[in-house]
Image 1: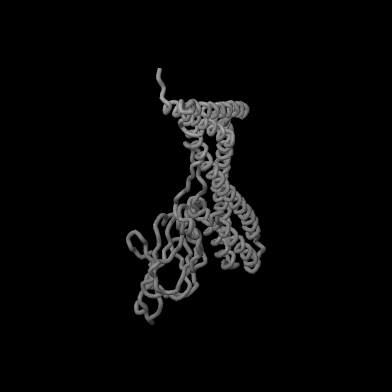
Image 2: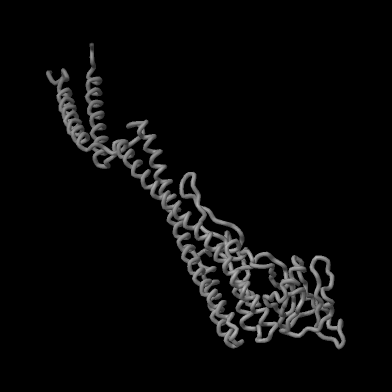
Length: 412
C-alpha cells in the first residue's frame, strides 16, 4: 500500500491529538472528581444524573417549605397556649366575681384585670409570623385581623381562608388557621345576640354589647333581630331625640316602643334584652341586635368586663349578673374546646412535617449514594489511566518526530 508523506504526517498528528484529548479529559475528571463531564461520556448515566439532581433541588425547596411551615405552626401553638392560659385566669375571675358579698367597686377592680387579659388575648390573636404577616388573618396577611371599633369591642377584619404549603410531591400541610373559625364562630352557651351600628350612621353614638335579662322572653323572640331607629326630633312633644324599636323581619314595632325619648346611657329593655346606647345619635341612625348561636371570644370577655363595670347591686342587676357569669363560664369552656381542637390539629401537622422531613433526609442519603456511584470518578483508576495516556501521548509525539525525518529529500 502506497502512503504519501502528507498522509504519514496527518496520521501521526491525529494520533497526537487523540491522545492529547484523552489526557485532557482524564485530567479534568481527576481535577473535578466527576466521571461524567458531558452527556457524551455516558449518555445513560448523564440522564440519570440530571434526574437525580433535579429531584435533589426539588427536595431542597420542600425542605425550605417545611422549615417555614414548622415555624408558623410552632408560633401558632405558642400563641394558642398563651390564649388558653388567659382563659383559665378569666374563669378564675368569673368565679370570683360571683361572690355575693362583692360590691360594684370590687367587681370593677376585677373588671380592670379582665380588661388587661382582653388586651393580652387580642395582642396574641394579632401576632405576626417571621415574614411579618398576621398569623390568624387568613389570606389577608397584611391586614390586622382583630380591630377595635368605637365601642371598644373588636371586629374581625380578616377572611376565612386557610393557607397550605407543599412539603412533598404529594403532601401539603395547613400552615395556619383563620381567626374567624378559631375565635369568632364559637358555639354559644345559650341563644345570644350581637349588637352593632349601621355603618352609614352620621351621629357619634355607639352601642354596648348588651345582656339577656329574661332568657324565657328572649327564647320566645329568638331568632328575630331588633332594629333601633332614631327619628326626627319633631316626632315627640316637646321635640327631642327619640327612637323606635322594630322587629327586623317585618318592621313591626316591638312592645309598643315607638317614639321613645332617648336617655343617654339608659338601658333599652326589649324582648328580654337590655341594650344601652351612648353618645349623640342623628335622626335616621340605626342600631341592631342580631340573634346568633355563636359568640366570639372577644365579645365574651368584653361582655363580662362591661357587666362587671356597670351592673349594680340591685336585685334586677344581680340576676342579670348571675346569668352573665354562668354564660361566661360556659362560653369560655366552648372557646377552650375550640382552641384545644385546633391545637391538636397543629400538633398533627407538626408530626406530618417531622415524618416528611425524616423521609426526605433518608431519600437524600440514598440519592446521594446513587449519584456518587454514577458521577464520581474512581481516583485510583483515573490516575492510573492518566499515567498510561500520558505515556501514549509521549510515544506518539516521539514517533511523529521520527516520521518527519523519513523523507527522501533527507537522503539527497
